[in-house]
Image 1 (cartoon, helix red, strand yellow):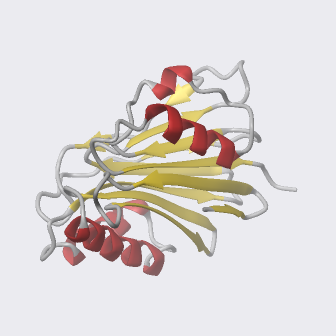
Image 2 (tube, rainbow, N blue to C red; image 1 turned 135 degrees about the vertical axis):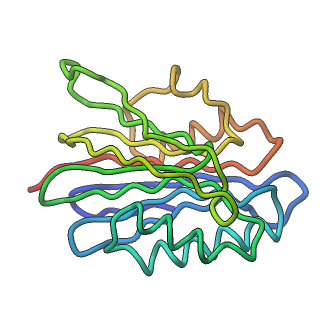
Length: 203
């Protein structure tokens, strides 16, 4: 699954736990009035109930694409109360301001890789808080960062070994990067999903 918004292109690669018909991991990309809202969601466990929880959260993300990331997570929390819950990281790219804001609950890994090797911090991560969306919502913390042409954003679920952050290459299309991460680092003990987005800047 891939897409191009002009100022940002993105791709998703994922796999269900062997023996399961569907995955409980979900990537959502929802355009908004000022940019785009991106979320990676991991329904707790695996199988049908995990997929149902992730799908409900995905619906909220699409419906709330114009809202701040904290509001999106709060709305997901209310919606998922009668499900097994999920962990998720939510990110909003503001195209006009060339910034991104992100926050997360649980263990969805995220990294922003700056294309400029002279950047003071070449790699940055979202502020994650322990908890479960739908059951135990922590106090959220959000970070806003500037974006530059060529910056790469990666969000991944815990079905992938996080060692890939030390090993993958920035080159190639976003789909090639996502596919290679899944192929090389899926542990096949859980559902897995990786979403890769590259900021292209304003034309």
